[in-house]
Image (cartoon, rainbow, N blue to C red):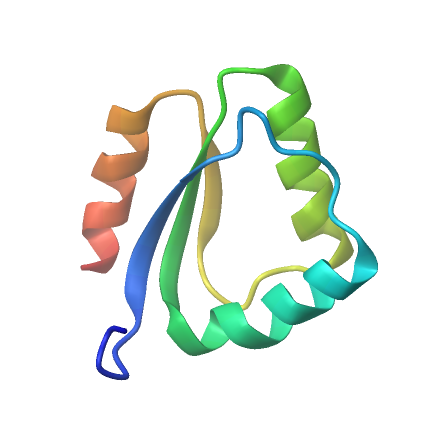
Length: 81
């Protein structure tokens, strides 16, 4: 999809729900192959909690950060382009 290059990812996790073990294991293996940096945006405390829990269980080997606005997230991601 990205010709073997890693890319920056912006994800809205506002309505995320907890992931099962199979999903967490898949993401832990596959995301490091394609993700340069990950910015997550959430307008809800629950979304932030779910994302923080996900990465607390399996820390990312790439920069990952939570934001309350898309604009802040985009500004942060620009450092990794």
